[in-house]
Every structure is written in structure tokens, then in C-alpha cells.
Image (cartoon, rainbow, N blue to C red; front, side):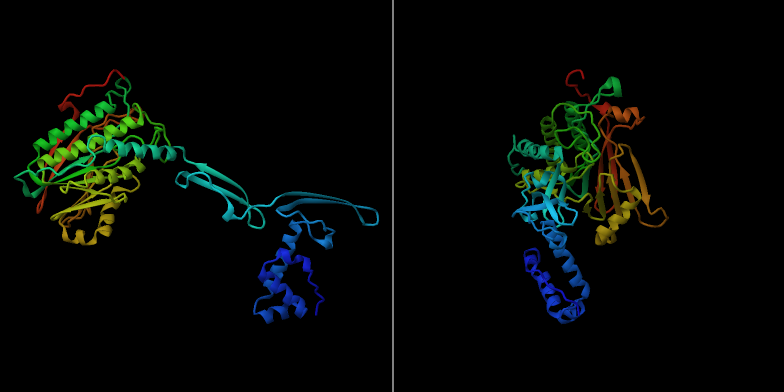
Length: 441
């Protein structure tokens, strides 16, 4: 049996449980006996003793090592120097202290949590906070102001769209679809550098002209599907950079100007579709250039058209959206972050019942700025899924031009039959209508 005497001065450095373990050790005189009496392991008592000694030492109390001058309340010992004489007696004592860390619950975090991208906290040996470093994303702060611009632009001329009379005669079995590839509203392209001009004014006029052409030539389908396939806006905040990689972008004018032109263009498409079709469904895909803006924009559009029962807006924040029309199932995705050959399996997983009940299945993507269609699976006699990437109306920017990209510019409308799937297409390209430039860029 060991002769363990517990120093009562250590009580303030121990938790209730630690002190219970140490008192049992003193009472039974042996760690094993104390552990058996308390129904715990011997290592629990050893650990409690080590922790109490360590904490006491950090506050300047360790009599067996000649440390008897405790740190003041709220302070902790940073270091201690002792001067001994030739007989081993202490003749000099220097103690360095610092302010004790704070409890994590007491720490004040001043930045807005929505804008914090990294939070590093430094703890002392007792788990108390002694320092904190906060990193904020600059454009996240700006996005709050950008969202306010969205709301203002959406309600500038038309606070809430009032219901309008539907066309008298429409074809129940047809749906006219208007997929819009990466429109990059707000991009600047200097023709001497890229071969073709592009700015906010051209982008707005170009989409309006293409919309007029395609809507006028579409049949009087009862249903319309307007799909913005992502990257409708060229950048996502007041700073013209890509949201994730922060690559510098060629931007035209100011962010609020781009926002207003984008909203006007989207509303123009929806309202032109309402003139021709009885119902209009709108999908706004999340692009890699407008990750945040696209989410907010779909909510704003839904709010703007809440009184117009002929318009529905898909507000799902997912990066994959679906719409079923009779025997056809349409999936939409911007085209970034997933390979085209994986999309059919994603559709079959996300929409099991629709996959089994439909004959014609389509994926519509953008992102690559070029046209292309693949059929999966490729085996004959199997009903597969057509995955298609759509071209864009926008001109190339300096980076794409210098990399050698020379995609054909166009926009399409697709006519879907309730039973037979796709039955017709119309195509428009920039050469088919003139667009005046806003000054010499």
C-alpha cells in the first residue's frame, strides 16, 4: 500500500470527477484498490492525477518543484525562472504570466457568418480560446448588395405580374421548348481581338431577337418550357471573377447594369412565351459562372410571377432539374462537374417511376458552347437517353479566342409531342437579325 497524501491546494485545479478519483486513491492508499471501488480503470486515476498536476503547474503551483507563487486570477503562468544557491535553496524567483484564454462560449465573432470562409481558433492546453483568425470571402459580402439589386430590378416596372388571357386555340399534344445556352450577359468581347462584338446591349438585343424569331415560328403548343441552362450571367458579384477558381473575366460596365439587363431579358422571354402558349414552365440552371445568382434569381422569378397562374418556376436548388411531358422526360443540367455519359444513370436514379413510364428521354446541357448529342445506352433495340449540349448566341471572349475555340453561334427551339417525343426544331443564328452596338468598344 502506497502512502499517497492529496494536497488540498490542488482542489481548485481539478474537476469534480478528477477530485473524486484522487480522494479514492488517498482513501484506499492504492490506485488499483481505488479503481476497483469506483468501478473504473486504473488508467483513469493516473490520467486524472497527471491532468491536475499539469493544470496546477500552468498556474504556477508545484511545491515539489519549488513553484509556490501562483498566478493571479485570470492569468496563467507563461514561464518561471528559479535561482538556487550552492546549497540548493531558492534565492531568486521570476514568474512570467499572461492573460488566461477565454471559454469558447464567451468568444465574440464579429464578421457575418454568411461571409466567413475560414475560421482558425487557437486553444491553450486547457481548451480555452487564446486567439482567433477569421477569413472572409470578399465577393460574398458584395453578393448581399447584388441580391438587393436583383430584387429591385425584378420589381422596377412590374412589381407582380397580373394574370393575362391565355391564347384561345392551342394544341394540347405539343410543347414548345426554348433552351438558352450560356448567354454570358455582362461579358465584353472586343471584335478586333475576338472577331465579334459582345456587351450587355448586344446580349439583350440578341436574345430578344432570337426569342421573337423562335416564338413566331413555333406552333401554338399549349405548353412551353423555357430553360436557362446556366451561366446566363458572366460573373457572380461586383468583382468580375469566376466564383470558385477566381479567374479574371472580361466584363462590360457595372454589375447592377448586368443584373437589370439579365432580368429584363428573362422576363421578356417568359412574357413572349405567354403570348403564344397557355402555360409556361421555367427552369434556371446553376452555372459555374453564376453559382449564387442563379439560385436567387429563380426565387425572384417565382415571386414575380406568383399571381400569374399560367407560369410555374422550378425553385429547386439542385444542379439537376426534370420536366415530364406525356411520354417524354427532360433533364437539364449546366454540364459542369459531371460527365455526359453519367447523366442517364443519374436520371434513372432520380426519377425511377418517370424513367419506367416514358419512352423518350432527353438531357439538355450547355457549358461547352458547342453542339453535340449522344445516345445512351448505345445497344440496339434499347430505349436510351439522348444527351445533348447546346450552342450559344454569345461571342467568344479573349481567353476562348486565344485558346482556339471557334464554336458556331445559334439558338434552337424544340417541339415535343406528348406521345412521339421530339417532332421538330427551329434554329436561329446572329446573322439572321442585326444588332446595333452600344458604342465602339
